[in-house]
Length: 357
Image (cartoon, rainbow, N blue to C red; front, side):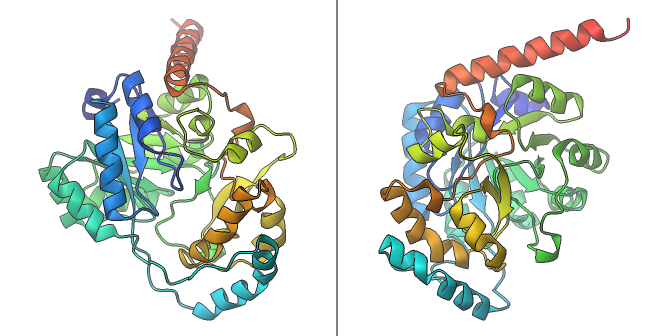
């Protein structure tokens, strides 16, 4: 690991910020206390809600942690596409007896207010999803003593992040659960993402700043593999979803290892942006017709997803999951960190024994 990241945590293990409730203060604190880097997901929260969670987290641990922000999205080119999709979802609204949400609820996710809070009361790490901040913003975080990470899905995005002044890039392979953090949402590129190891090699040859690798990682041996391939740390999301400290819905946790859900797929069905989830009825019926309209579709379907969860119907929920979801282990976060660290060391030892002398 780079010296700056080494100073933050004992192990090169980062708990991914999973928006929607999974990555709250309890999970981030448990990871931090165990020697990893815990993360709060500020996406879909108000600025005050984010700040309250930071205060809760600081009461739970003095260890390192990060906060993840969603970048503001450009104006929607074709609002009529959302209207068409709302019409298609009318049957879902009737079935779950809940109205569809307002597509114009929020376009910037309170970004400026959240940045202002994090500059006024700095945290150790801030990461960014769905784009790259301006150099002025990244420079301001540097002056505040905050380490910045920009999530990227291509070598070009990584290079832009380095030029803008990011301290680290988080390289996200197509295997990752949840949203693909592309900086520009282009529907023509759907289903064309790059696997983590190939992408990691491309980015390593493009930038000189540290790299965090993420996408489908579930075991310490996989962490060893990405470290050997040039990453400085590994970020895991789905692996932590089933921890008792995770705020994910119980149905979501159970679905990860339920043989009823045999595969994952990138879909726009729930949010209007490509995101990997367990294939269920909602994805099969609506995924092919969902427009490229984020966050408008997210707000349209938010009530449906809550109603499905309340009804105990996993077939109507967004069951975000990486490709390695069947390897999830239901362990407390601290135990999972220790197990991953032990597996990492075992993999390194095995590799050392096989290396020519």
